[in-house]
Image (spheres, rainbow, N blue to C red):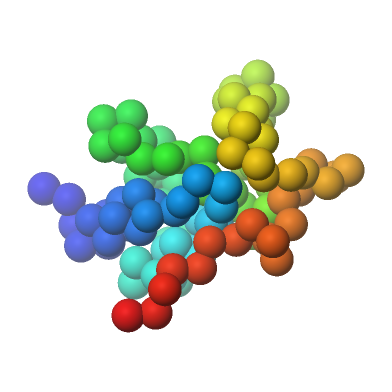
Length: 105
């Protein structure tokens, strides 16, 4: 059975809308573990396919894709560009424009 952090993180990831991204660390903080960015990465790696998570909408704190070339980078970039997300000359996404901020509850 998944722990509370995993349940919250997966629910948050599912909320990231098309055309927006979120960072591993921001998601971790929202799910209750501000230092849990690597845990979010593990959740994405192990649960994206079976739980239908929009894994491609999660990037690092610099707005960059963490996957290496030939190891998923190109797929993630293509999926994001298809959703209208733009990259700058340094292969970064402008988080001021594309960062998803959930509505306060």
